[in-house]
Amino acid sequence: MVYMNKWVSPKVFPYFGLLALGFPVLVIVHLIFTFIWLVKKEMIFILFLLLTVFLFFPIKKYIHFGGKMPEVVQDTENELKILTYNIRYANGSKDLRTLENYIIEQDVDIAFFQEIYTRQWRSEETFLADRYNAVFDLVSISSKYPIINKQKIILPGNGYACMADIQKGQEIIRCVSLYLEPMFLNKNIFKIKEVDEATDKTKIVTEKLTTGFKKHEVQIDLLSKYIKESPYPIIVCGDFNSVPLSYEYFALKKDLVDVFEVSGKNIGMTFYDYFYPIRIDYIFTSKDFIPKNSYVNKRASYSDHYPVFATLQLKENN
Image (cartoon, one colour):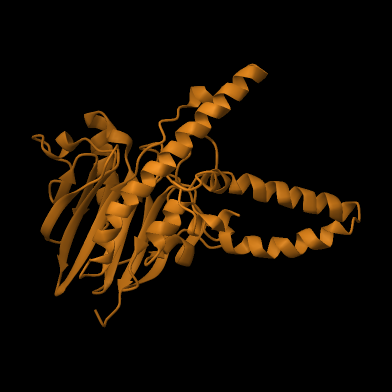
């Protein structure tokens, strides 16, 4: 049913998106029942064990078993180190400088940011001043290499995106930083004291989520043309405010590669503020790139999101 998100849009039926959001919990429940029936020697255990095999395909979008966090990869001619990070405004000069030092230490070639203050790039002490920057509203792209073209991508509602064409040697790479419509949820809405309150708040949460799914569909439809019409190899990064197996995920990934799914390390959770295993920050690329590794740095605590890193190799025939 989760895979129905590939074909059924939120405008037609938005509730498959809720199923995608609850997928990690459903997997845990499935495994618990499988174990219970194994202990009780119930024959239904065999059916559930067989069905468990099919869970490995979607689970790869959330977690990769084994593997150590990769060391910093030295630059080579065809490699790019990529970072995408929702920095949650990095409010305050002290936090901003600390974050800037962290990013410089990581030595990334192209960094994609979401939930930024544009004034942080325009003040006297400009953020990442020694790099080439494309900054529009709540999103930005920062590059070691020259940006030869940049523009804002106008999305309806509270979605934001920008594009930059980056010149690396003889190659031009199109980059898109994306921040899809937020769901406008807060922790207080999940604090429940009475049964009646639980019913009311469940309705509120469901309405906010299904409304957000529908807005995402419109924003993705507009964004897709920039991806399809790109004459260059393309990298799409950002906070999609959507989990793997959602409509948004499948729609954006249609002609692209999810780098973490191919080369990820460990758990892919990127948003930790609600103590729920949510992966909503992604690095997608066209098939012009070979994903060499990808990981979420859970030691960085500059935001309520974790930064996502990847090393890509541009194929020689480009």
